[in-house]
Length: 274
Image (tube, rainbow, N blue to C red; front, side, top):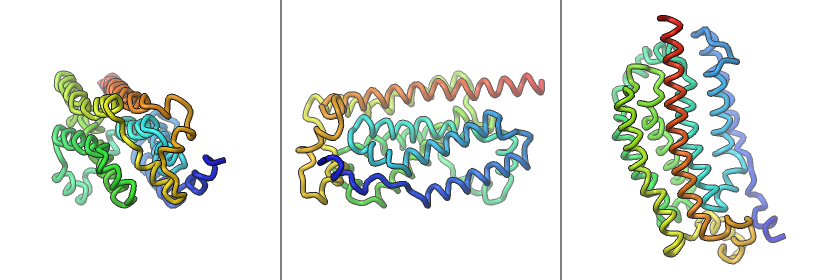
């Protein structure tokens, strides 16, 4: 009964965001239909529709509230948002469509202000680590505008971060040798965030400020009921250990799968036009 009352009103769908995503999907469909020979049932459009749908479920559905109930669920959300959706969106952009788009004057001007992939990776890793520091988590839990702005910045950086691996422009993709170095660097830079969760679980643990925010309007200490909301091991210190390993694993899998997908796509194009 406490759990139902606690989460009452928290499970809400973001309808304006849904309308925006539907408009983006329609625009993408029109551009692909008129500017390319790709059909809607081909792989790249399916990647786009799946990624845009997954993005909505991740940030615009009640799953957002559920992800705040434990660190491991939260890390699944973050991993999907920054390690799964960005490469999938880039894979969904046909090369010839990208070449047409970048000819527009405004796109050409904006492209001159882009970050290098390594700089984006370093900045993303620092900000991603800082996001999970207790004092910043508390600030984010109290101000949704700061929280959403910070997550948007991380998402934009993640697109730059994945660019040399799955860019729609073959000239911007790293060679196999540079790609391997970049993948290693990516793993090293994101390792501190994984280790932070694991070590903090055994040393002292971190209170969940988002759960505290949900319970604040009831004047109930979050620690007194957090153990009843989710079953074990989500309600133990091992939740944070799982969070660290989940992020590390999903990042590694995303690197391998996305690199393989873009390489297969390039090989198919070479075979077709060679």
